[in-house]
Length: 291
Image 1 (spheres, one colour):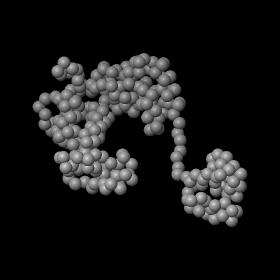
Image 2: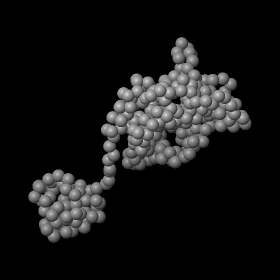
Image 3: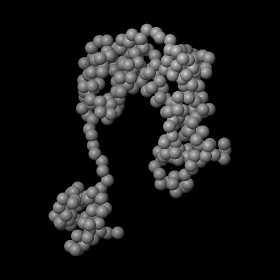
Image 4: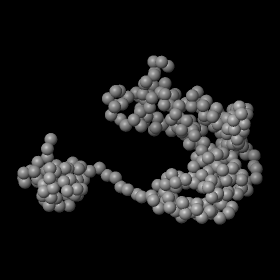
């Protein structure tokens, strides 16, 4: 292990690997447990003792040389010490966004070592999903009421997976099982708008699942947060800076629609191929590109 310290693995090597199977295996591991476990102990074991990223690493995934490491953006490179952090985030996202809303887990808060912590186990659906059983124990599937509070918390009086999935599009999770599970936040609304969910759709979803009328301050806040979102565009252009405004004006006049004036002394062209043709024209006018 000491000899591997500091080695780096190409992040793109396993970003292309289908890790959904590894996420599925973590649930299969839980199916073999005889009793519920704390969320923290489950995550700790899976990240430190059953980490698929470490398996790829020790299996000899392609390593980057020094030049490649310096050239590539940091996000494409991972060190051995980071594997626990990266895989933990994958697991937490999977549990929060998939396993819990789909009812694969039973989750409660329990007192462990004088602390109240989340405890998890596979539900009947989860046991069926992992192949541990061949039947699902049917229970009362009547959706329980959801209450949208004036403090932006969403309280669940009982299981309502459909509401959890729908509301999670623009909220942040704050708990498991029952109680205040979700909270409406500005970042959550902004992210939803970025995913093409309008404020009208968010309010419609809240109204659909809420037992009571959505508080006015909550509706106003969602509309206000959504209205602040803006779409911008990005492209790659070549920016040219001139020594003075007069030179820039001469070029813009000669080039016409081939250039876009950015400031008194700067303009841009769409790419270097266009720039090359433009410089040939400008060279005839005594204007040259400096080295």
